[in-house]
Amino acid sequence: MSAAPELPTLADAARRIKTGDLSPVTLTETCLARIEKYDGRINAFHNVMEAEARAAAAQAETEISAGNYRGPLHGIPIGVKDVFYMKGYKTTANSRILQDFEADEDATVITRLKEAGAVIIGQLNTYEFTFGGRPTFEALYPPARNPWDVSKSTGGSSSGSGAAVAAGFCLGALGSDAGGSIRTPAALNGIAGMKATYGRVSAHGDIPLSFSFDCVGPMAWNSEDCALMLQALAGHDPKDSTSVDTPVPDYGTGLNDDLTGLRIGMIRHFYTDDYDAPAEIVGAIDGVGETLAGLGATVGNVTLSPLGDWHAVGRVILPAEAYAIHEETLQKRWNEFGPLARNRMMLGSLVRAADYIQAQRRRTEFLAEMDEAFEQFDILVTAAMLIPQAPMDDTAPFPFLDAPMIVVPFNLTLHPCHALRAGFFADGMPIGAQIVGRHWDEATVLRVSHAFEKAAGLMDRRPMLD
Image (cartoon, rainbow, N blue to C red; front, side, top):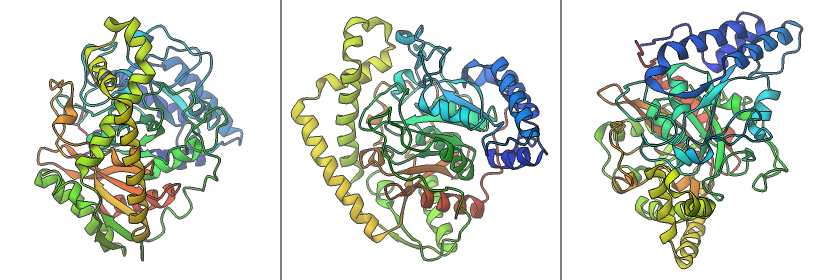
């Protein structure tokens, strides 16, 4: 049941703002009031930019009234994960190492949000240096909490982004994903989050964790909202060496097309045979396939290498690259790192060159395997989580020892992968699924995701914050 019946989705707000039915100023004030009332318990933000947001909302209203409407993000309150450079503000990655760091430029995605007329409402919490897993209480700022149950984890590392959107503090948020850091908090907080194809969205001005995995993307209430955000964010950036100069489609065109004839492959063994996920997760993800079949798609099973193999390769590459990025700082400022981030990074110091090379060779084999699957299917579907939301006091340093990371395969192969709400546990906590597409085909991923959300009718329920 909705705790915020007055709060529209991003897409609904955009339509109403365009017609003059909704004021950007009123919308921004609604979000600011919710932050003031509830964020003391949730900790999604560490910097609420009230004055700046009010000024941007007023400017948007003036421009729109004068007939200068910029597009669907014009006047929309957006939160920003605290890993993106914003000129004039500290960018900390929730680490004491960077508590005084201030960039001299905006990240490219910040520039694009501003050009689209978005109202940047504040900087959002993250796990230290975006190394996800479990929350830490020793970082610069206290961890975000899950709005559905503040005793439960948000997932990470885009923890504040997931919590803020779920709580209705903003209508969209920026996240980053090197090992599920958009998709895991999207799933655990019951919202949507898109990790686009590697190179689709600029990572210039994003504090890195893993150069060969890092992706930037949108998080919002539903898939239509993510499509509108991705439209503004996507595109080649010469400042980013990983950015690919390939055409960006109109993600709104065809979003409502039917699914007749589309081929859906269920990677079911990831959450049944390779890991014995709870029955509620199995039922919810199987239900995604059943719903898509009911919409005209052809649904079958696809078999890939066991999830543990994918997980093992990711657990070599990601820590090694993270350690390579932070090695000098670890040597010079060891005690300023929080212990969880430090311990996770130090795993990378144990990876030999031979291990890293063999892992990259296996990664190439995985890519060929995934490409073969996409010869049979247009879209792949699997779970976005294998266990329920962990308690906030579970700060195990190596949570990936509890269960394999079901989000990692699509970081390894660089495919676009979208997380969405697929159901609920008996206690009311959300369950998430992943929708995966061919390289550069975010449009079909979003089309399938949007169709599922409309048919399943799961998105009317919001967390009760009172």
